[in-house]
Amino acid sequence: MTTNRNQTVFLLGGYDLEMITIKQMLEGREDCVVIDKYLRWDNAKLSKYQQELKSLPEHTIYGIELQEDIVPPTNYHRIDHHNDWDSKPSVLEQVAQILDVELNRYQKLVAANDKGYISAMQQLSATEEEIADIRKRDRAAQGVTEQEEKLAELSLAQHLCKYGGLFVVKSQTSRFSPICDRLFPYQRLLIYTDSEWMYYGAGKAELVKHFADDITQRKVFYGGGDSGYIGSVRCASSKAEIEKIVEQIIKEYGNI
View 1 (cartoon, rainbow, N blue to C red):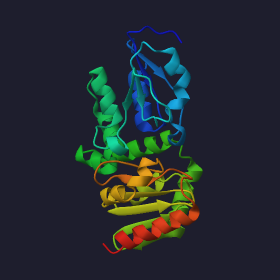
View 2: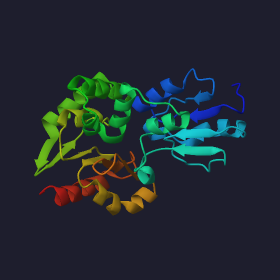
View 3: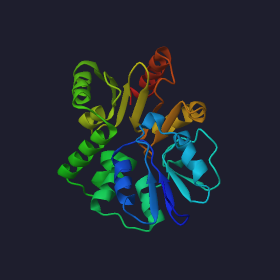
View 4: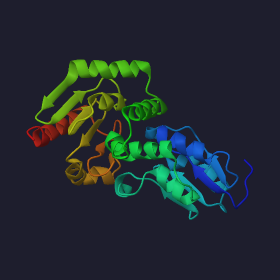
């Protein structure tokens, strides 16, 4: 890889529509270098770029949504909007600010989708067609297959329960986005498997406080603003622990 010290280096994190849109924004710019390891959410770690960090000590380096599992060098800067950075703009907006460029209509919808899901796109007066297109593209970027789309439908048909204003789904796929998209709009939603769980909607802030220790231990993560999401890292909890958490959330939010 040939670079000059005046170029800004961007290390890409786990793939979704926002990450692909950022890559498209950066590619072709003479002032930027894009390094992409084609990561997923579950393996988007800074250590994946350890060799590049060592070989580029004189460059300004930005890592986008990378878990800092190693100590970053002093020329490294984090771009994120999860956990303690939850109040920050979407990473697409942060990259646009760094580059001093204005987002177009499509990019604004992508940023809104990533930060605040369908509700945020609706606040931009997105049409039903625009929302459906963004959501379809995002699921594809995450790697959701046709088989997983079918498993989502099967999960809803066989394992959807409702407790007051809370929807609970035992999912037959680890891809939760096709379930969320099919159930929207919802006020509260809990999806889980034997190896992970995810809660979406009102009450998320209280769960962030409840799981503060697990968040510190990187067993749980959150994002999406006041009514966003919080959930466990895959396989960070046992099946029994997840079942207990599901029972607790139903008890807490199932009668609201």
